[in-house]
Length: 213
Image (cartoon, rainbow, N blue to C red; front, side, top):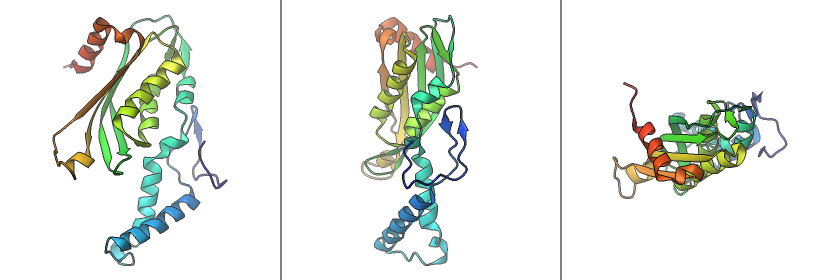
């Protein structure tokens, strides 16, 4: 855990190797809110007006929620639901929603992740793959590092024959400021093991673009 101040967070509950996320550290909330009150003043606003009275606290709680991945152990999430199984074909979990915060401008980027692995004696509960994606995404990130972290965590924890990760996201730092290109999408990929082979990688790409309709 990465909680300082020696205070137990609110509504703290251990579930399957990770901590329930709808809780806040009161001491951190107060400190962050104080800074945001000053930021509002520096922007030319009046923090004492009715519409902004609770804004610093709301922003502080939002930030703590949006970065709660620092308090999660993605490898432990996987280990909490690992099972021995004689299955050696590709397992694909696609269209996993991704919401993260760009570390350069603290603006959101969001989209979808597609993750596959080929078991080598162990499989993992399917819900754990999206939880691992979320644990890394709910930190200050760049999409390139996020892609590699998901890949490496699954490879190091499950020791599969191979891992594939593709992430497609829109970045508000490009849409709202700077170049202001609203329709651009950034795609990143990372592969290990068998997915370095063209045939295996092509099968994965075909599966994540296929429709069940």
